[in-house]
Image (cartoon, rainbow, N blue to C red; front, side, top):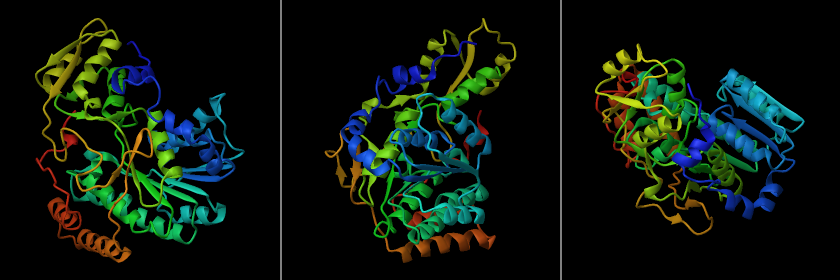
Length: 403
């Protein structure tokens, strides 16, 4: 199997940018970023994932004095440390610690209070997959992680204020059609309710090309296991590189005003179809493909495929719940600043509800999920009550039913 240069493939065939989209804004604000980061104490939650680790790498270029990283993925933390320690060009502060724990655990609270205060706090711990929407149990876990735990952490931060707090969002929070997007939209509204008490910002951004668990990253694993590739033919998305995902979060965290939502300035024509990326991926690998008419045909063909044969690929039209054919970063009612930054837009008028409203929403969700007399549709209906722009797409089929 020919292993291609993934970063180069991303730059050439997906983002089609030779340099980072955010390079000009980082250079223009280098002095201010240094002032805000150098020597400061940094806590990153969910730092072992693609976006969290990329944020860490972006921040380390400005030499913080202390870095603590929390993630439930112990193996991911190990690989993060190996990556940082093995890079000759990477600055790692003397006080660097990783903790395999959840930020919702009592032991996290003990660590936070004992090892703080932290000047910069960034939270990347979230359910991020549309496929996490299956039934009432998977949805409850998603809402607990993306909303309930975020609210508990905000209450902790109010009494232990950092200079900057950032919480990652998603483009799927704009006009959400799936529960993941709705949960992140509710998370946005939760943090906005605290924006007068904390310096707090968030960012929506595109798909991160070849991020952990993504469709594209799965291609590499399928090739290693000699399994067929399955890809939606009709879905297109905005993409950023892993490096860019960390940079937008750093810029939003350090340069934003409290209550602002950042997004990358990408034109509609920069969206890419997954099908086109898939075809380019195999061309770059010097491997022809054979288009199969079904997943059954693709799986059967893979059983006899050798390195000299065309690789079986199944392109299908999207038919699963919660999928839009394209994504967007803001809505028609948003007041958007497109002038301050070269590569970033900023939503200035995010809804800021009283904390009492957020508490009531969470209470209603908790009571419903504790009632034992609920299903997926009743949770969706309650989310719709509190999120007027949530228009759920339900087809009765989830991504876990597909390859």
